[in-house]
Length: 413
View (cartoon, rainbow, N blue to C red):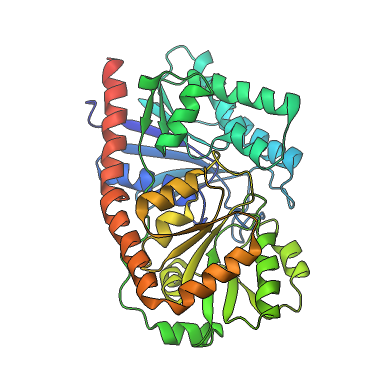
């Protein structure tokens, strides 16, 4: 087999049909590399995110399937009902043990998707104990150790231990892919990686270009009134998102008789608490996740798309929802710290407005201002679309991965 026709094994906890987070990118990469002529095998978990329960129809200890030409082996693992630190650790450990005991085929290269860091570290241990290990790549979608600190999930010795584990795992790989230049800087300056060991390959927009949308019909179906300024947040409702800020903003909007309606669409471990704390607030509604074919129509029917992060989130992640938001033609409002990766992404795109994280009044006032300024909304939306075409091309990203993996294997010949 020539280096241009690789046997590639991808190990990652999340995969289709999970609609948000890392899953669409792992799925897109596997399918893109398969379409390019490579032999791709994926070992993944049972779909559970963002609901934090295994989807109906997925039973048994393991499950083999072929999905859009990609061979999958799904491995059952523990899924916590309330994903706190210890429970999430147990989930990653159980998935890691399943990986260590499974057949990976005879790959030329193994790509580990992190998070989940613990299962990736366990898989790396198996690789390093082998007699003739393949080339290994770690694909850094979130910086795990930074996330624990920035969300308050770990401090002191626990944070230090996690950082050492992440550094060790990444430094043992033959190559590392980071999804943003800020991630590369953190990996080299804080986790001790060499500059030439890290390749930056951006995540891409995994949605096809939207066709014409009857916005009025979609709004009617969702109960959104024509005069309302609909501010839509899509995706996971977890600790990182700090959506209690949106609940507080909705209370302020109601007290002002504001036309702003906040909509939280999706699921996550904080949804029940958010619904309880917002009972009786007319300016806030919750919407269950919609099928993929309806997702773009709902985004297009809104007036403003929201990224909300809790204060202190600066380095850990690039919100995956931004790649979708920039496909909608609508402006983005990002409640995020000035020095965050999200803020830099919004500045680079010109597709939205940043406000201070944890300031609900600013969120209301900014939404009202944009709601009155159709020309400004259209300008920001156009900027986001142009950034999508210029920077977030799926075909370009897949080609970069293919070239990187072929380079690594060629070095091993």
